[in-house]
Each structure stands twice: as structure tokens, then as C-alpha cells.
Amino acid sequence: MIEGVLAGDRRAVARAISAVEDGAPELPELSAGLYARTGRAATVGLTGAPGVGKSTLGTELVRIGRGAGRSMAVLAVDPTSPYTGGALLGDRVRMQEHATDPGVFIRSMATRGHLGGMALAAPEAVRILDASGYERVIVETVGVGQAEVDVAAATDTAVVVLAPGLGDAVQMAKAGILETADVFVVNKSDREGAHEVVREVHQMLHLGAPRDWEPPVLTTTATQREGIDELWDAIEAHRAHVEASGALEAKRRARLLREVESLAAERFRARASAALAGDAALAGDLTERRIDPYRAAAMLVAMAAEAGAPDA
Amino acid sequence: MIEGVLAGDRRAVARAISAVEDGAPELPELSAGLYARTGRAATVGLTGAPGVGKSTLGTELVRIGRGAGRSMAVLAVDPTSPYTGGALLGDRVRMQEHATDPGVFIRSMATRGHLGGMALAAPEAVRILDASGYERVIVETVGVGQAEVDVAAATDTAVVVLAPGLGDAVQMAKAGILETADVFVVNKSDREGAHEVVREVHQMLHLGAPRDWEPPVLTTTATQREGIDELWDAIEAHRAHVEASGALEAKRRARLLREVESLAAERFRARASAALAGDAALAGDLTERRIDPYRAAAMLVAMAAEAGAPDA
Image (cartoon, rainbow over all chains, first blue to last red):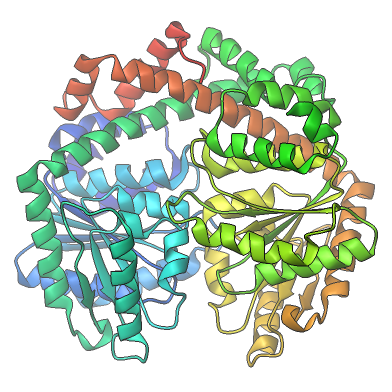
């Protein structure tokens, strides 16, 4: 599988991403085999409420990127749900335009068994696409929850997509999404209310602290292919800016260290879970309210540190 | 503070919840002092997209609950954001109706410093309200992200609120929200499209596995106070059902064990973070791609287990 991914074999890439989804036992080996060949892809996050047109925008960015000679991958990130049939069907529809183009890879992703959820699974999947040679990786999220904001914030350039009539900027601010944006897009700009959304975003930006990079606020009508070139240029400009300033390297380093901490914490959680399952007395003391959660957690940390048991 | 909370002193309760928000060092002591006095409150989650009318529904449930002689608390849960002024202002507006009623407590909550985020902070805040004697605790969430679904799922009765024209049931299914619901409410039922939303929810429910409790699908117009009595009755009926069947005890036990595991994992993460910060060689090997994230995490687990350092 490692050789297949490095050689750009699509089926190997697809199987590797499935392994990430499942939290397969071969992940550490896969990670070790690919990691040295990562770091070349520029990653772009596309976040926004359901219905703003992220999928269409993503597909259009693929078209522009191909025109610019870039190989393009799209990873559509979906929270865990038994109902994933729709998203997978969507992949097939979206792939049709690029079905014969080996420079395009589009894939939905859920977390079925990966410890640590999407926040840990998505970066791994991105590294697979990166190691496989895709020069631009677009990470689309389904909604605007904290997990999805975290995933989008872990890209080099975070694009926040809004649209008229789909919840205002104040609601997005509450989700913590505005602070993470490098580029704003108001899609469906042919609809009534688009200018108001642009104005609201500018107002929100003025409330925040001044930044080294001032996020541009663009308008697009993805279904009419309007404004996509400008969006592509803004993404590339942001990337060039953070690369030149050193901010990209600092951001990547910080998120890598955080990711490793989270991986370690999840491994430890597996140990703690096993220790708690094996200690009926502690569980009983907890449920009978003889020991409070904080004290139980401290006991569990001590037990699991000694145990050194299942590193799942 | 512990005595104040147990005596039902509002200012002590407010300060205790602020301590949870901040992840204050006195939390373990607070938890130990209150835990034995918890478990009496019935907790209700109110989840749904921004704009469906959760706040109004929550306020109306408080009114009905007071009429039924119950003391009522509302915890409005907000993800981390520097912009929380709006929510707090909202509290004050909402409190006006109940300003002179000692049987009502309404409070917004963000996570400013709590390790583990809202999934760990919210249950602690609920226990404070529980220990303080509130018989019904309503936990409102701002959005429908995974973190918020988790918070709502950790209540005794999870109410999912929908409204016409605000994203369809398929979008909610993607967020994993339908599976967690014990009661569905289609609010703003005087608007066009309400019957379609009700029908969509019934269709989604038929796709799922049969359940011991079939979630009712109610309609309300909270601003007109229509359907609120029926909602209150449905919540009480669900609670009586799970209490009688033993499902409530099993659910509470499972979420308590999960919470303690998460607390332990977060404590461990603090150790791992300190270990990584103190090991420039490991961080360098990671960023230079000589050691991959999985191997680094395994090394970190071993280091942190030995260290036994800061149990933050």
C-alpha cells in the first residue's frame, strides 16, 4: 500500500484513506512509510454552513487548478453518521467531470473507527494525498461545528464560505469560525442580501484584532463560474504570503506538535478505558458517588501509567 | 463556595460555573464537595441549528415547569469564541421575566480554559446546578456540531429542534443528530413547510433501527406559546419511561465512565504536552520528518507515563 500511494496509484490511495477511516492496525506502519515524503502539498480548507455551495466551489477550484497545471485532490469530511450514502453518491456525481483525469482525486471521508475522531483522521488522510503527489488538497467540511472548524483551521489556507439567507455572520462568530478564516467567500452572490453579508463580514473583521494578513472578502456565484479565478488567486496569494513570512512553517509546526499530543492522549485513553473496565470497584464507587469524577480520573491516570497495556 | 452551592445561593452557583469555564485549580475540590449531592435533577438537552428558536422554547419550558412547581435552570452552552457578549446580553434579557423568582436560574457558558472543552465542562456545570437543588436543568446548545451533539446526548432527554426553511432533515442526519434524539420538535409550525419537516423526520425515523422508545414528533410555535404543554409532557413521559425501564441508570453510568476516561486522558495530555515542550530533540525530529507522528506519540506516551509530572 505504501509503495502504491507513493507511486500515485489511485486504488492504493483510496485503500489507505479507508484504513484511516477505520483506524486500521496498519496505520502506524503506513504513517512511518509515507511521512518523509509529505509537506509539498498546499492545503485549503472550505468551511461553511450546509447549503452555502461548498461542493460546487470545490469542484470549480479543481477546474481552475487543473487549468493552472496543478494536480488536485478534494477530501470531503463528514462527521460520523450511519447515513453516509448521500455523500458517497455525491462523490461519484462530482467525479464524472474529472473521471478520465488522473490529476484529480475526490473522496468523502467519515470516521468509523479512528480514535480521536476527525481532528486526527483528517490530517492523516491529507498526508496520504500529499505523499501521493497531489499539489493542492482541498478539505471540505459538511458543517460549522467545533470539530469541523478545527479540521479547517488545520489547513494552510482556511476559506470560510457564506451565502445570503443562511444564518448571519453573528451566528458564525459564535461557532468561532470567523477567527480562523484566511479568505472569506460570499457565494450565491446573485441572490438578494449578498451585499449585506459582505458588509457584515467586514464589520466583524473590524471588531477583531489587526492581523498580519487581512482576509479578503470575495463574492462568487459558483454555479455560474463567476469569481472563481479571483478566489483561486486569493488562496495562492495567501499561501505565498505565509510562506514568505515564515507563518506557514510556524503554523505547521504548532499543529504537528498538537496532533502528536492528541495521538498520545488517545492512546492513553485506550489504556485508561481498559483499566476502568477491569476495575469494577472503582466503577462502583463512582456510580454510587463515593468517589467523585476528578478523584477517579487521578486514580485512573496513575493506574494506566503503570499498566502500559493496550496501545491501540 | 461548596456550602453556598449546596444552600442554593445564586451567587455561589454563578461563581462555581465560572470556575468550570476557566478550568480553575479548585475544580477537583469543588467536584469532591458536591458530587455526593447530585443525581436528583432531570436534565433536558435542546439542540438544533441556529435560528430554530431554542432560546424561546427554553424560556417557555421554564414557564411551564414553574407552573408545575419545579425549580428550573437553563444552561446555554456556547463554543469558545472571543465574541460572547451577545449571549450574555441574551441571558439578561431572558432573565427579566424571572428576575424575582428564586426558582429559576439562567446562565450562558463558554469554555475559556477548561481542558477537554465543552464535552467535559458542561456535565460539571450541570452537576453544580443539580447539587444546588434545581429539579430540571435544560441544556441549550448554540449549533449542531459534533461537540454540541455530544453535550446534548449527555442529558437524560435529548430534544432536537427543527424549523421550516432552516436546512432539511438530511443535513441534520449528516451531523449525527437524529440518532441521539428522544423527542423531536418542529418549531415555528405556523410557517410554510412545517408539515414537510414533520414528514421528513418521520421518514428518517423509519430508516433507523427500531427503538425501545419511539421519539414523538411534536409541533410548536414558541412565540405564540403553542404546543409547549405537550412538549413538557413528552419530556416528562420520556423521563418516566427510561427511569422505569432502567435505561436511564444505564445511560448515566455509561456517560459517567466515559467522562472519567476523558478527564484522565486530558490530564495525561497536559503531561504529554509538558514532555514534548521539554524535548527539543523529539520536536525537531518530528518537524524534520525523521520520526513520524505515530512513533512520536508512542514515545511520548512512554515518557509521560514515567514523568508523572503536572496533573493540571
